[in-house]
Amino acid sequence: MSFLQRANQGVQSLSPYQAGKPIEELERELGISNIIKLASNENPFGFPESAKNAIRAQLDDLTRYPDSNGFELKQAIAKKFDLKPEQITLGNGSNDLIELVAHTFASSQDEIIYSQYAFIVYPLITKAINATAREIPAKNWGHDLEAFLAAINEKTKLIYIANPNNPTGNFLTETEIDAFLAKVRSDIIVVLDEAYTEFTAADERVDSFALLNKYPNLVVSRSLSKAYGLAGLRIGYAVSNPEIANLFNRVRQPFNVNSLALASAIAVMNDDAFVQKVAENNRQELQRYEAFCQQYGLEYIPSKGNFITIDFKQPAAPIYDALLREGVIVRPISGYGMPNHLRISVGLPEENDRLFKALVKVLNLA
Image 1 (cartoon, rainbow, N blue to C red):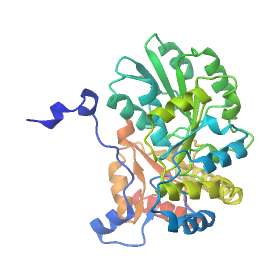
Image 2 (tube, rainbow, N blue to C red):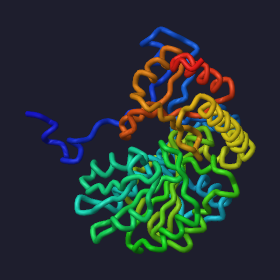
Image 3 (cartoon, rainbow, N blue to C red):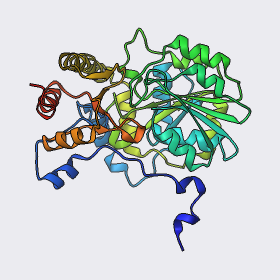
């Protein structure tokens, strides 16, 4: 008997999510040290001190279950963004929330719309629940919202939009998103995935929470893994109208956010200085990446995230492997249908210097 044949039909065709290679794995494979990882869009400044202090204060209570409702964190988020706590849903990372939306609203009878070259979790969850995927061809590596509208039919239940998009870094303005939402049927759930929103400039950032007042079918998801530095704790949040949030609470796992994540998130939610430091480093270093690419004639996709995606005009796998031997881990994205590209996370200046030096050597650019 094959257990593959016993699995749900959608699961049979899935491949596991491929995360960025861990530093420890490369150390074991090649026996090298002093490795830098620019593969998973993690925070280069490490774990914020405010979160460390919060964890220390929580250690004696780890025999107790966490607050399943996340009362204090919801209060902190609501205060920071002028929201109501009943609008907020907490998750084990924003991935958990992205999946939660699909489990709450979609089934095998429905269609889910997302873009080519968008976050790979969208097609994964669509297949897993046996829904029909409507992958819309990208426009300049980003979302073609007019094509999204044309693809909507009576079976459309859910639309995913990543802004900025991962792995391409494309960005949609508030005007574009507002105009799109105004044309979407009110019974279709639209998820605006803003895992990288803190890296956009303040004067261009989408006021997505204000859009919730106009569009009750909108769900905004955010992550604390990137700018806030809590990737290892897995925590994110979604904001929606209270009726939708109530439905999420019926479906989500109890205690889906652990005590250390809750305590850390409360602390960093008020640590504006840390987030601003992270965003400013990203702004400056992203400019250096663009200048490097321009200097050596490398084509790249302009990014509003904390990463840049470079088109090497040839299969990128050998370049990736060569960089590993230089002790630099980046991210191959052939799984996104981009075999000639590598996505590179923006690190600290000294980490980026090592990446530049390694690329010059590997590509024989000198």
